[in-house]
Image 1 (tube, rainbow, N blue to C red):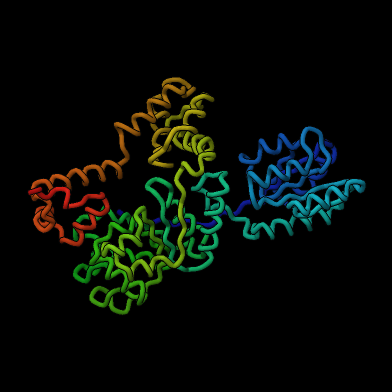
Image 2 (cartoon, rainbow, N blue to C red):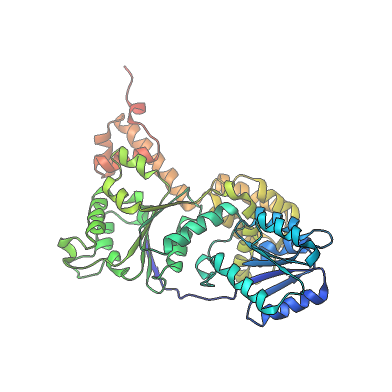
Length: 446
């Protein structure tokens, strides 16, 4: 239901991709940059540079303008499409300065004329990195989110901006999209990164436990999770699953920045709160199924995490990441056949990133050969879609079937059905709304 972790920051050197078809100049530039502790990847042409773009993930590109196969301007244009915001410095001879000027007008950060002075090169590199937002040289905060998608990068930019303040954040998106990973990334990028990260899965509390666990108990003298997260971040995962009575107390605690007086008078709340939800909280609020005051408390900043279908270009990268993560335990080195990767990149993923990871994990466990074939991948996708739902999906299906049975037994009488389920009417209506069930459909027709 809840877990708490601590994570310190990890620094890394800025990564610079250097592109030049002159081997001696390429070597000289690499030496100069490495002497300043930059991580450098030298490439001999634009085609090779583009091939390394996603794997190396540079923070800056330094490229010659005139090259065979692909010139610097074409490379710049490709980079702008694939990695919007990535800064590019162009190197040019005196005779091509007009071309370089046009390139800067097209989006290049700057240009330098050959022969390049070392100090001038370093000054431009430092300036480009500052403008690109790499002043902190800290990327550990986003380590749990693997992407090359401009859409996800844009959401990560929102997350990084949110991390700069203590404002509460509401992260929305379908199940399995990675909302919790975004919440963890915000914590890791914030000034609270060395404090506790407490994740509360709101739907997994037993009846009566959620109130005590969140706010503590005067009988036992135990601290609640709100107090335990002091100095750090409290993540309320799927906050719509909280009972309305608990929502009311939580809204009051967040507004007053103190625990409710009956459980902890005078205890100041020093936890940054991030909530996630796959439900439309505004719609639930209008239907009386989610507290409006709590919605206002939580929705200071909002980040929507897209479905996997909206960043399908990430699928091969995610497959490689999950394959590496899960084959470590088996001790075997596996790879996917090219047509298997093509298949995974084109099928539907209703369970989003979580379903994709489950398929890769199953492939690793059940593949006898070093290469995972398309047939194995197809079988796993079919099983995950039709016969092996995720835990959340299985729980939702059980709950819906249970509600249908109650409504059938009671002829659509909500009061009777709620009593049989040992739930109050408001919470029962909330369950019906979440599973798109109307009591009127079960009432006898005369």
